[in-house]
Image (tube, rainbow, N blue to C red; front, side):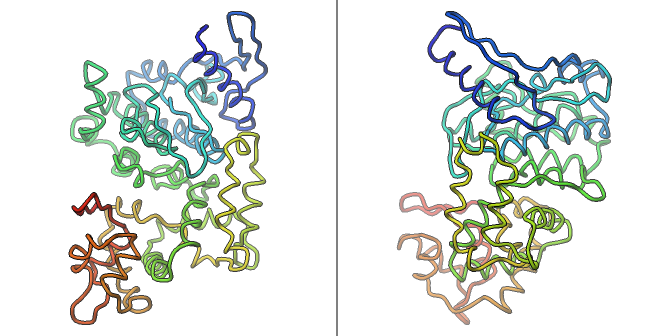
Length: 414
């Protein structure tokens, strides 16, 4: 390990381990030393072996109940890392160690050699990780913390069925499979796996990173959720609320209508996040967001400049959010689109929007709202009803989703 790059990598790993202390499922770092040839890292001794060995010793797969206890530990520590602004980039069964040989021994995440600090708004572009666990957007060279959630999806798939969701004989073949193939949920043992467990895996192995669950959302999923779930604070809430505070009145009205169509299922997670912000008189202001981050602060959070996001949430200092408006601010259209009942949610939301939000709008104004140029006018005509010049149902869902215009052609992502 004498090349400049590898020494730099190890120094970064030491910096991350030092900065990230304080989670029960994170391997404890004690010290690091260097001599002329090597860097030595002293960490806690984990005597229970790798998660990979435990999977193999169980004949290749876990029962659902046993898999759940593994995943709760993985998700809790990954939620902690993500809030601190650290992306692991190499989550796999070999990188989770048990502290003791006992079956119920706690598990620790190790090997931050490929990890990096990441700002809330940052995208990374270097291809790192292990082929079987790498997310599609990593191969496209534009990714963030959602890439770790894909890897957890792969781990869950393996835990539940004993085989890999994406497989080929060569690395390039595996990459092709990750980009193009859909995981197999038809063959044994999947028909005997609960529908909730299958849904859980599918919502992590979504090729669109915007539709994937976060670690905190995964802990709130019906498959894992306990009676009174204790969920970690989610950095996604900060990103979504930041966008909402800077959105136009029409966009806020569209999101408010969408939030009124949410089912109790989605509200459990939102209620937990709202309570983590410790509302005052039923409202959360900029100070609530600031205090929630401060409570969890480590050196990693400083290094990743997580607090910078608060500068973009300034409107909250004079216009706090009650729970109803918080729900509008903290929902992701993309994630809702991934739900099986999205059509029902969208049509119920449009009914609310018709009552209190829909208004006369020109094609030019709609294009401006969606940051599109004149090339989009023809495409947007379908979004406005000829009868009253207001948004149609199609227009409402497209407006919520946003569109991507490539050159003069128009492409709508669903």
